[in-house]
Length: 251
Image 1 (spheres, rainbow, N blue to C red):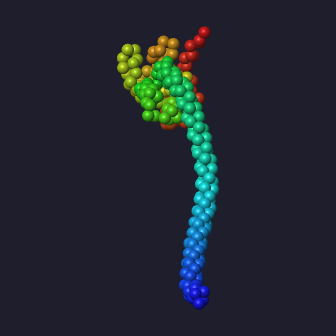
Image 2: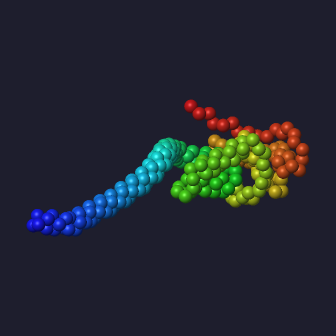
Image 3: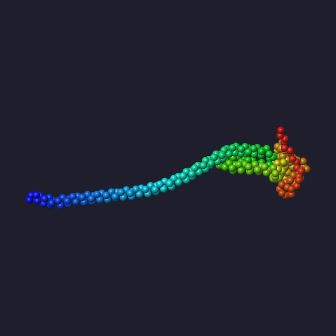
């Protein structure tokens, strides 16, 4: 009877024990499932982050490639500009060197022109001296470009050169015999410089050797008058016999 009671008691207690064990097993299973779900979420999150990072990496890599290409282009551009600047610097240095050499030459040419005018036949004295003075002032002006200085100097020399190939007449006050007299002047290139008074009573010439005006014989008056007409285009050109003083021979 006692054994039967113990067995019955054990059998009565068995369902309660089994239920607790089952509940615990279920709880553990649920916990495991929840843990697995959380792990999967974490895995999914890590995978998503990994994909995002991979996408970001590819995007950054593409930007790096683009920047590398741009940097290469920029380097070539900078190199080209540097080469151009170096070339420009060389041209500036060469131009400065040319200017440094050209300016003394132009100053020498201006002084030579001044001396040439001083020793030449004394025609258009005020005009020619003013041109020389203006030329010297121009060379001393730092605001005038070297090319313009050179052009103006060549222009002044060309004007002087042209005097040697032209026939010209004009009126001017001259010192003749120590007295100022206004007369008609006839210039025949640089060969002869002659004068004739307004009343056509006296003619003369410039003596290169004595550097003075001298009176000519009356027989030249008509010839010089004719030359004045030709120079002023009042008469057609013709051959004239005029007095010429030969240039002084140099040793």
